[in-house]
Image 1: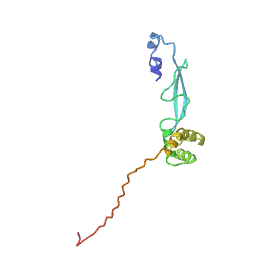
Image 2 (image 1 turned 90 degrees about the vertical axis):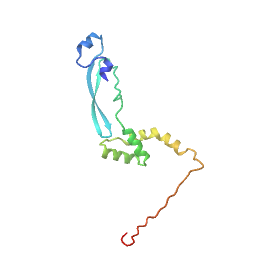
Image 3 (image 1 turned 180 degrees about the vertical axis):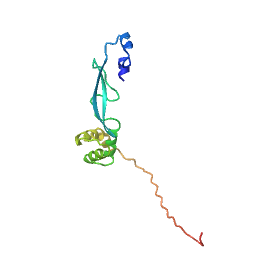
Length: 141
């Protein structure tokens, strides 16, 4: 991402000087992200102008890749916020506060309420199947 932002590869002094690029790399800073597999520390690059905005790890985000979807599916499955917190701590090694989980689930609460209050159809086809399996032996057959 930084290479496409600046227009030259790291260590390529000829392209930097020849292209008239005023902006340059300025190291990186560590960022700890909560992921479905646990916490991961990622070095995020920065530039001198401060104009670089990472797309893979956006600014101000602390959760990455599917954690929100996992929380929403657990909540939709009937788990409480505290149960979700304990589940994520055991399985993913991620310690999120109940307030954070509640904020994530509040994002879909309007859609859940809309679905619960939708008008029902007048006719629902239902098929009941019933069977009995009887194993019978007659003369060894």
